[in-house]
Length: 221
Image (cartoon, rainbow, N blue to C red; front, side, top):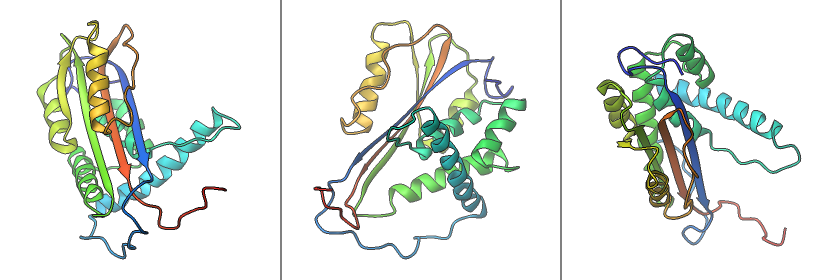
């Protein structure tokens, strides 16, 4: 990727892991319908939702095209948040392309990060009958130079855990997989088998959702 001169030290090979775990077993009985949000959305947040819908449909089309005849489940939110973290280190044509794909238009970096933070906070607390967690992490290969603004903005806006990790160490994979397992209550025990030469950053978003179907279906069907 092309990096931002204020926020990263040099071009990097980027590995993003996107995780989602769902559990349909929630509280007994159908949940109550939500008729209104707890607060009005900002203009940027509203634009983000519209952009996210278009991005999600495009992601599903691309993913389905690579798996003809198979059921496909994707998490647009996971992909968007991982790319949103990476966006803070992008520049030039790379940055413009990422902003276009994610539907951010001409919004500033501060507006984009504030929208991610606001929507994530709202989503996690939206329905007391649903358990929903979103966790982000950035692992930096030991010795790879990354400037502090990139680290700080991902901690502040995305609540990301940021840590250095020796990608060549035999324990590196286990460190990442233990974090993933903890972030998804064990539903996703592992995500990576190893690192490749040239990998310098690992950005991960993990989602865990547990709730009840509002309109239940017959398991026999």
